[in-house]
Image (cartoon, rainbow, N blue to C red):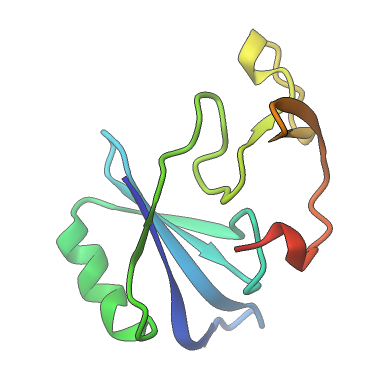
Length: 123
C-alpha cells in the first residue's frame, strides 16, 4: 500500500532542504516514508524506515494538510517504490541494472527518463 500527503507548511532541515510532500509504502521490512524536497518531485530526496504505521502517523499526521493521506497504486514490478510515475532503473528487469540510468513507462513503451524537476512530471 502507498499513500502520499502534502505538508501544511514546508518542513525545513538544518542543511537548508525543505520537505513539501511525503509518501508511505508498506513492505515486509517495515514502512518506508519517502520525503520530497519539491512540491513537483517525482522521486524522493530521502527516506526513513518505521517499524509501525502508528509511529509514522504519530510523527507526521499533525504536519499534513487538510486533504490528508491520498492512497495510490503500488509500483509496477521492478519500478522505484518512491516514484509517482512508473520509473525503473534501466536493465533492472533483465538482471543487468545500469545504476543512475532510468526509464519510464509511457504509452506502453519504456523510454529514457531524466528528472529535470519539471512540474508536468509531478503529482
